[in-house]
Image 1 (cartoon, rainbow, N blue to C red):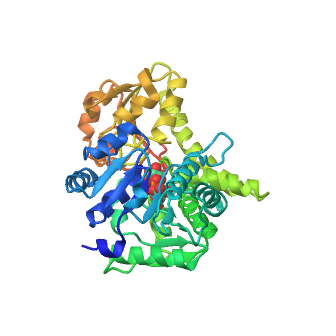
Image 2: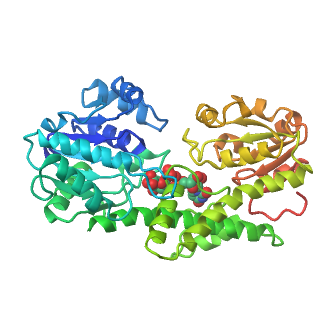
Length: 454
Ligand code: UGA
C-alpha cells in the first residue's frame, strides 16, 4: 500500500466523471477518500457502492472500495479536514447565458473549504483545483474566497494548485490510472512540490511527464487542449464536405494520408457528425468568450463551432433531399449518446439532428444501447424509444447512424431490407460497409464519401 506516502487521506468535492473516478481510483490505491457530492441522491448511491454514472470498470471498483471502507460519500465538507490533508475541487463549470463559464459551483466549493479550514487545526492543507476554469480563476477567484472564509493566507495557512484533468468519458478509469501527462500550476514551489510528490507516490513506479507552471498557464493548457482537439475534428469535417463534392472523394483516405505526417498525427481525424459531450463544446465556448473579453479575434473558435453545427444540419438536409421531404416520414436514429461506451447525451449530435427532423415534420424512432433514459429526459415524448435495433428500423423510410456503437456496424443488409419500408441509410459515423450495402441494393449516403447515386 502506498497510503503513507499519499498522506492521511483525500477529499474530493464533486462526484462527476472526474471526481468520482478520481475518488474510486485513490481509494483503490489504499488512500482513505471522502467524496463530497451535494446531490443527495448521487451521494446516497455512492455510499451504497452504486455508481451514478455509466463508466467501464467503475461499478465493480466502487463497490469494492466502499465495502472495504476506503471511500465514503457525504453532502457537505463539514469536519473532513480533521481526517485528510489534500482536497481536490472537481465541480462542474457549465456555460452561462453570456457564454462565460458559470463559476457558481467552484465558488461554493471554495467557500465550504475555507469555512472548514477556519475551525480546523489541520496544518497547511493542499487545495487542488481540477475543475476546468478560465485563466486567472484559481488565483483571483478561488484563493481570495478561501482566504476570506478561512482567515488563513495562501502559501502559509494552505497551499493551492491548479491541476487540469484530461480523462475521456468511456475510458475514465483507464485514463485516470494511466495519465499521459500531469500539469501542475502553482504560485508557490512548495505547493507544486507537494502535488508532484503525491503523484509520484500514486503512480510509482511509472514516471509520467510532468509540467510545472503558473496557475493561469495550467488553466489555459486545459482549454487550449480541448479547443485544439475540436479544431482537428472540425478541420477534418470541412475536408469531408469537400470530399463529398469531389469525384472519388473519401475523407477516410485523406485522414489516413494526413495522419502519416508526424507533424499532424492520425488521432482525432475521424470525420462524422462532429464533437459533442460535456467538454469540447463547453471549453471552446469558454475560450471564445475569454478571447473576446480581452478584445482578441475569436473567429477561429467561432468557425470551429460553426462547422460542427453545419455538419449536423447537412445530414438533415441530405435526409430531406433523399426522401423528397421529411413530413410524415419515419426516420430511425441509431445512437443517442455523444460517443460510444457512455450513456451521456450532453450536446450529442443525435439531439440536434432529432430536433431538426421533428421540426421538419418527420416521425422519429430512436435506439441506443445505453442512453435511452438520458435522451428521454431531454427529448420527452416527442420520440419513440426502442430497446431493440430491429424495432427502431421497423417500417422506417430512412435510418441515420448518429453514434458509432459497434453493434450498428454489424447490421446485416438483409435485415435492413426486410425491416425498413425504404432501405435508405445515412451513415453519419462512417462505420458501415458502404460498398456492400450498395451491392445489396441499399441507397446509402456516407459522410465524407462522394456518392453520385445517393
Ligand atoms: C474530452 C477530451 O478528449 C479529454 O481529454 C478531456 O479530459 C475531456 O474532454 C474533458 O475536458 O473532460 P470526452 O468529452 O470524453 O473527452 O470525449 P472525446 O473522446 O474527446 O470526444 C469528444 C467528441 O468528439 C465526441 O462526440 C466524439 O464522437 C467526437 N470525435 C472525436 C470525432 O468526431 N472525431 C474524432 O476523431 C474524435
